[in-house]
Length: 159
Image (cartoon, rainbow, N blue to C red; front, side):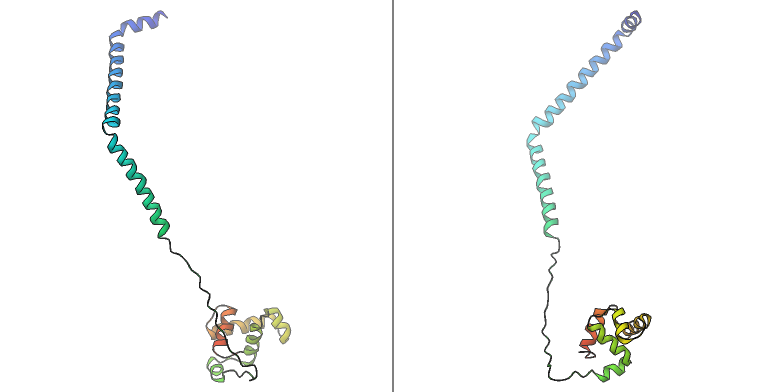
C-alpha cells in the first residue's frame, strides 16, 4: 500500500489533469449529443421517415417487377375420319428415306411401347431397336420419342 500511495502523491498533478480532461471530454460529447438530438430532432425524424419509405419502395418495386409466368394450355381437336383407312405420305417417307422397319418402330413408339416391348413384338434385339430409334431421331431431326411421334403425325407418317 505505501508504494501505491507514493505513486499517487508523486503523480498527483498528472492524475488530476487526466480526470479533468476525461470529465471535460464527457461534457463536450454530452453537449454534442444534446445538440444533435434536441436541436436537430426534426431533421432526424425526416431522415428516419425517408429511410423507411425508401426501403418500402424498393421492396414494393422488387415485388411488382417480378415477371408473372402464366401457363397457357392449348387444346386442339383433331378430326380423324375412322371410316377411311390411313394412308401414310409416301413422298415424305421417300424424302426422309425411312425404311419399313423404321416405320413399324415409329408406329409402336406412338402406341407407347418401350424399347424392350418393341423388341419383343418385332422379334429383334434391343440394340437393333435402339439403333433404329437413333436413326429415326436423326432423320426427323428430334431429340425425344414424344417429339418424334408428334412430328411424324404432323407429317402424316403415322396415324
